[in-house]
Image 1: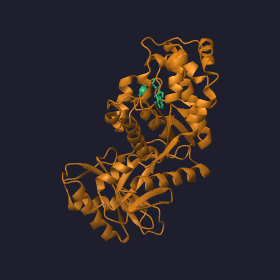
Image 2: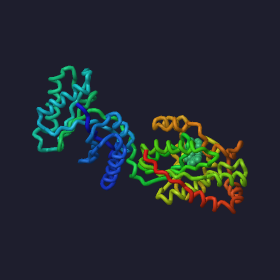
Image 3: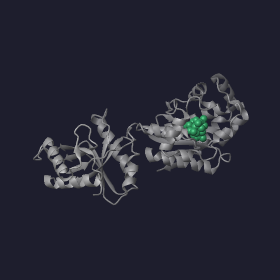
Image 4: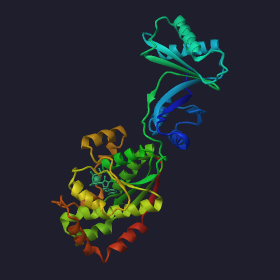
Length: 393
Ligand code: ATP
Ligand code: MG
């Protein structure tokens, strides 16, 4: 017996009425995106259920892995679909199903029959009881436990009959596309890919901005960010990665501003430019991988100063996390190995030995005045020369 289809469970809390359609449509779109390289799948909804049915050969494990990356899914149930609803036939199929799925029969089970098709000659209770006894007749080693069964054999009688017992845990969250779009400041580090993943999990589409400083940062460092964006896109869907040449701005800051303030000032210009592309592309917020106290630029004082240039919300989902907690997620979403590759991103080149940890906004603004004559042109050039790469996972 081979599984050719999956029944998808999703949390329905708070998705009544119009929201429900939006939720389901986005879920279907993301499932199609996730499965597109696995095989030819028909993904459709039917009376409060979403199904993915294979129309070609496919690798089962690969399909499950792909579906595990679709936010909004709480459970993935490999399902057998039968056209013939006749009871004796179904009893045979269910016995075979139990036999093949559970070679070790030293287990308890319960049949949960659901009759959505009210014309079916038996009601749900009769159906479940009769099916249970047919299975017991055939395999007396199984035992029935209606309260805490090891195996819940679910049989849904609808247009066709759907038989499943396994529920593989999905990632939860909301389908990407149900909550607008945000701009991720993506560096080559560990934190920002995790931050992007966490916001995408709430249903938010992601675009990204990366600042590089050639020749101080290498082509390889840029490739690393592209690779990270691809990994995030496996969950978030397609990402427009904006690669901004930040060299001239960085050199100007280096030349004209106090070195212990370099990082703060640089971060302020990064946020301004990221916000420009956010607004241009319809993103309603920025996302960073910042976490309080992790490095000098992330003290609460300095975060406040960085934030001061932004006119849209800045989401920092890692803000209260320890490094190890962030690393754990990075490993789980498979970005960690890429993030720890040793290619410098532009922040690490121009770092001061003793950066200011308790920045003062007035002082920083005063230091920035030294850039007054040139910064508008430099910002314009950085924006005009952006390279936009479409990342498709
Ligand atoms: P990460 O591990 O995400 O690089 P980090 O701990 O190295 O973070 P910083 O270098 O201070 O911390 O950067 C803080 C945040 O600023 C990053 O999480 C990212 O969102 C953004 N950022 C830093 N450098 C860049 C860059 N070169 N391009 C785009 N965004 C950046
Ligand atoms: Mg970094």
